[in-house]
Length: 219
Image 1 (cartoon, rainbow, N blue to C red):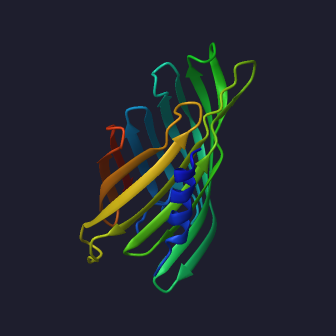
Image 2 (image 1 turned 90 degrees about the horizontal axis):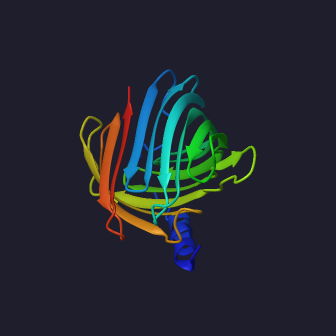
Image 3 (image 1 turned 90 degrees about the vertical axis):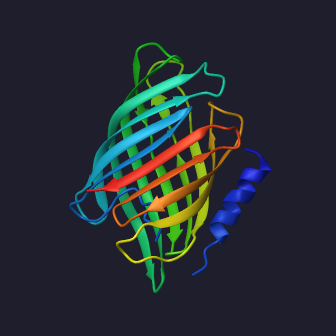
C-alpha cells in the first residue's frame, strides 16, 4: 500500500475532536439493511439485532478487478458484535467485530468454495464529525487456487450544520480504500451523505471517475 493511504488512515484516526449513525448494526430487536455499490464492488446485507451487542444476518458480495479479469461472488451468513463502546458527553466511539461465512464462486477457481470474511471496524462520531477504519479479510478455503482479497478502508467527514432529530442532515465524507488482488490503486471517493434518524444515503465519484452509491435503512 502506498504511503498516502497510511497518511490518510493516521489522520482519520487522529481527527477525533468533540453521530453519524454508520455502525454495522442498530438497537436491540431492530433490522438493518445496508448497501455499497460501485463499478467493481457491490455489497448488500440485512441483519437483525438479537441483543444490544449481537446481530445475525445475510449478505451478498460481488467484487471485480480493475482489469475486469478477476471476479468473485459470495452469498452467506454474517455475525456482528459490538465489542466495545465508549459513551462520552458529546461523542461515541465503538469497536465492532464483523464476521461472515459464505459460498463463493468466481473465475479464479472451478466450482464453489467456502469464503470466510472476519473483520474489525473502529469508529468515532459526534453530531458534527465522523471517522472510521475498517479491515476485513476475504479468504477462500478448500483445494488449490485459494484467493485473498483483503479490504482496508478509512473514512472521515463532517456535517454542514446541526439539525433536530427528525430532520435530514447533510454530511461531506471522504473514503480511501484498498482491495488486495483486485486493484493496485488506492481508491479515494468524496461523497455527499444525507442522514436521518433511520436512514442515510450517500453518493459520490472516485478519483478514477467511478460512481459510488451507499445506503443504510433501519426498520
